[in-house]
Image (tube, rainbow, N blue to C red; front, side, top):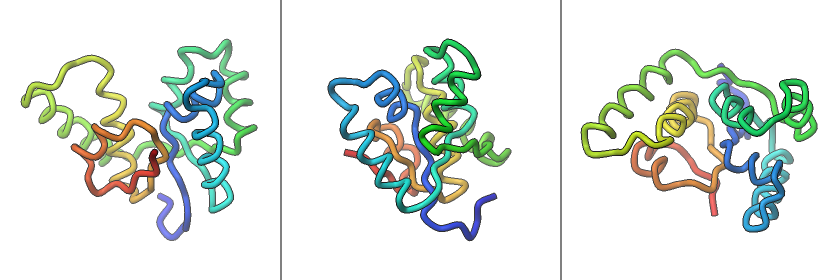
Length: 139
């Protein structure tokens, strides 16, 4: 747990994908906010973000190096966050939510909520709806 550590930020995969792909639409915003948050304190990613980034990475070594170059560290998802993600995702599905690419956001949102970490993201709709206690750093 990171309790007692100040100014720690959990970073969503979309921000890192923007940076790694130099997205014309989002690179500047994502890089600026990643830099701002790194000046405030440590930056973290979790296993779900890592798996999403691995899709477009050539190798594990390359991905590890890219994350380290940005100053990011792995912070594992606690078991109670995994449980919360499943429960909230179940509610989402029962109320008509689609299956397409939603589950990773529920893991990331639950991780941020359970640990009390702010989440740097540019994809806010699902987080605001299902994890209203999470502080979002977003456009």
